[in-house]
Amino acid sequence: QKEVEQDPGPLSVPEGAIVSLNCTYSNSAFQYFMWYRQYSRKGPELLMYTYSSGNKEDGRFTAQVDKSSKYISLFIRDSQPSDSATYLCAMFHWAGSYQLTFGKGTKLSVIP
Amino acid sequence: GAGVSQSPRYKVAKRGQDVALRCDPISGHVSLFWYQQALGQGPEFLTYFQNEAQLDKSGLPSDRFFAERPEGSVSTLKIQRTQQEDSAVYLCASSPRETGQGSDIQYFGAGTRLSVL
Image 1 (cartoon, rainbow over the protein chains, first blue to last red):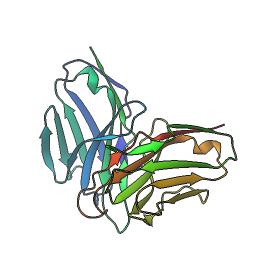
Image 2 (cartoon, chains in turn yellow, blue):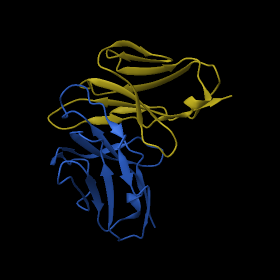
Image 3 (cartoon, one colour):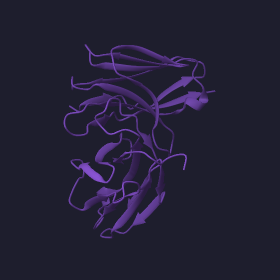
């Protein structure tokens, strides 16, 4: 079992829908939780990062962390065609050496 | 520059050739990271630098992979005697902070797509 599990999709939704993207993890030492968006042939771009359990909102995006269940989510409200991309969860902890672990990514298509 | 710049964007190599991939981080960024992203996968950590010091190279897949950042800014990832399994996108990221000091926000370049024939 990988440390971070993410359903690769693809996920296809109509414009305006609410999108829910999820990751589970097994390493309870992870301290920081991030969501990156990656457009085709581009590098990942940081969308959200959180430290503690709970919700964090930024515009149409909400990141949710449940450390007790080792589960994180990203919600996108009023999805737009421009949101079509691959969404990567990533988790970090410092263990005397560098440890940033990414999920596989979920490919999202928002259909006009 | 405004962001992390990587060159070349695309590289085709014959099996057995050596390649060098360049990364120009955001000016003033202390930490620099290299990742390998295979098709349909998330980035996998290779190595990172804090200024010119290579603090962790545990992700390098073999001794054919070598990275340097001699003056603490530009970095080069070198792959010797390339193999087909080296085909991937190689991403570089930089961060303004030293790793381990709180949240670790990284800014990624667009990557170099390496194809080994």
